[in-house]
Length: 280
Image (cartoon, rainbow, N blue to C red; front, side, top):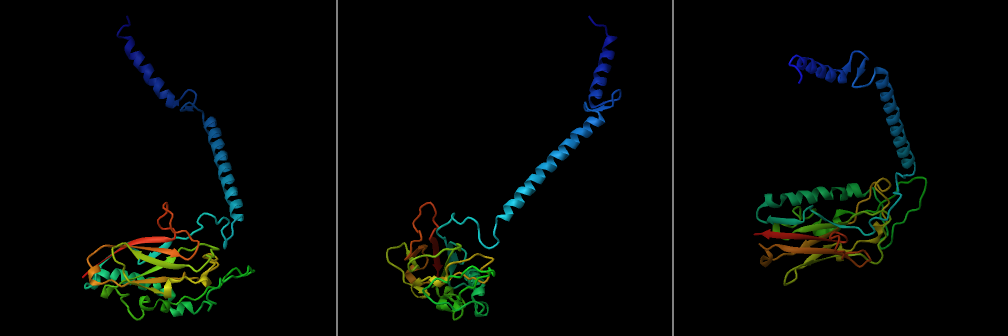
């Protein structure tokens, strides 16, 4: 049996051993390593991580050499464009007698159509309708764009009716296809909208028939086609009193071409669904 005199000595040894594991004054070690050992291991990791950083930078540099500022290297991900609605809402609800309720939609449409003003579109070309506007590759990669003036949207242009029909309960919506470089849709593409209800709702399309002219294709990319403005189709919903205070489900599709519009995995591929509710 150990005497009580041995206990203080044992405690002292344990304390000394614990301190020595952090710093040993006899050998000069810190955390079990001498200063030269720490210097070597830090030098190793410095060289190692500098090598990794250099390899990463070299890989990125080589990859960037293969890219083209004007044309993406791979263009096979989205063969069919999506259909987009403006104003930017899939749930359009307002009181036609209360201007502040529909002011956000009117303002959004007006802002969106600014780039279609004559002052902007005069910079573009007057193209031949019904034909693709093909442009040969040249040293100058900048491409010309065809004019699309907002006046072609007639009653939905915001020029003759600055409220886009919202004040009379006959709202306008604008539709456009997403941009895809090199897309040349065959046939005569046009937009067709239907309302899911017992009796049909009359609609007016601008341009006539909701047509999307071929002269706005192909698209050559954001940098090459800097002044390009996507063609629009305006749909004016001619709602009547019996349509008010009801939530109407509207579906618009791209028809007349081979562009896909019935893919159940993507509800926005070649089509768009939105709701409209007008309150008296």
